[in-house]
Length: 184
Image 1 (cartoon, rainbow, N blue to C red):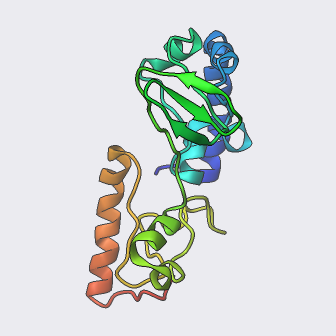
Image 2 (cartoon, rainbow, N blue to C red):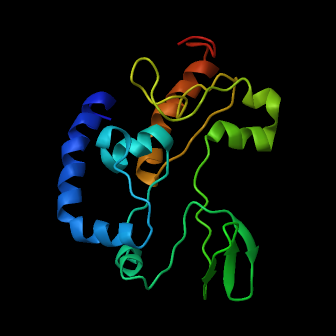
């Protein structure tokens, strides 16, 4: 991107504060409906959360007001014990009636997903994904992972389009011997 990540995160604090001010009534309704809210790392909002985790946020596409108005029911923080014909039973004994059930299960570190798919040998060699390294760059995403020939590529379409060229240049450099997997 055109700004160092630390600068972008600082700018995002003010932007997140303004968004929260404009959306105060909606946020109050969401909280009252049981929707867990947070302002991201250092109160820098969704952009910083994306760079730290690659997920863990919801971008409103129309459902937020329905949740705030309790037309869409939600429950967070409880494991599901049983799926019934028209409801869910939770481990705390509560039951939530539902016409439709959407499982929003969240995100794990991509390294752990790689472990499930490719096994411990590969996963133990790759670095953690998302968050920032000691230079303030996003860890392991769109760059060498610690395992030769294995790459993590994620995020929205705009970021993937931007970073695909940078990743292609790195791979080309490796293939031509201009850089090595174990060099920074």
